Length: 104
Image 1: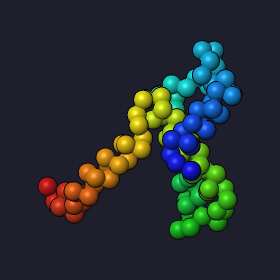
Image 2: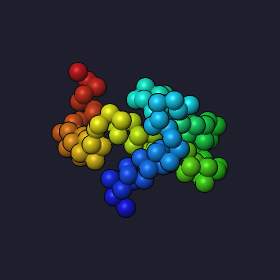
Image 3: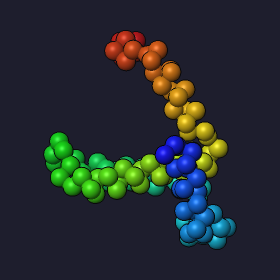
């Protein structure tokens, strides 16, 4: 499945829950989604709080999926082509040298 297909599925899900409606209890604003993204990311960290590896890989997979969905939603709401942004960032990162960047 391609990234744009995931984005479409995510958008369909949000529509089906009515979260795009003006009076939604879960307004889909960039700010709200960014907060949710951070909260879900913290739930990923809980899996590694006291060990190097998650002892619950199925639950970790679910948390990673939540993070990805919030990321897709934030990109969608911000009108960012996430696929293009990722490709651009990878091109930029190939030009970087993190060890030299830290010396500056």
